[in-house]
Length: 352
Image 1 (cartoon, rainbow, N blue to C red):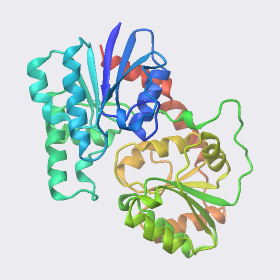
Image 2: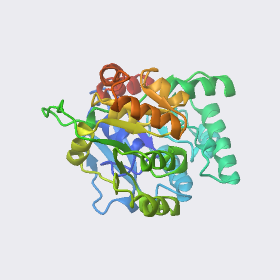
Image 3: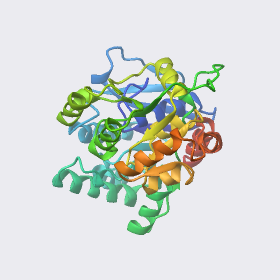
């Protein structure tokens, strides 16, 4: 049996984001050939379970996000020296500055998912971008296996570092509710869901709908930044736009997704976005920002926009039935590529 340590997440049960959902679903779908230990943030769990299903949980007394994430990941990695693991799965690159030292002290196989080219994101300052770029370089150099969640990232790693990646995306069927049928008759609204950040083109989507007669429901963490607060204040005044705070209840999300006319995905960075993969499971029309990550995820079969005018034209065309819907394509792709049982097997292959 392969003993695997996972570091770099807040922990499980999942309560934060994409990597946490990834880990939870790896464990939910694990084979009998694997034993997992997951490092968790003690600051994020009032009740500190010792196990989640078959996985052992270990706690680090630091926050897993923000500046403390560096030390959190470093301590997690050094803690792995005390136990003989067959492989360590590192999610993200923030703690990878310590990898050169770790490789001197341990022969344990290191597998790193480098995430979505974090250093390129506009939300970071110059120093943070430099730190993340150096961390990425060390992660690629000192990892036995590098995982990318999108072929576009794999192409970048090959071009930048001359190293091959294993491309493994995310599953998305956890967004569905077993034995509940998605209704064929839809409601009268469009849906968007994301972290409220400029790179997700939130302002562009809201501004477009402020000049349209069609309804938009937009879910996000509006109160976490001045950017979100200002947008919420401005566009809450529009009668056709409903600004909705984060929803974590799977039944509520299922209902909103299953009844919407189409899903609008504004992400411009980050590789394969879990929220897009989840939306594709519903067989709804997908309208995505035009970037190589989204085109790869949807196999060039979604509707794509790069500005407000382009988004307006797509929506007007859908409303007048001048374009074919892509929902059936999205559903077929999701079933073929984005199922957790297959994703889990792909990860387990890298441990060998």
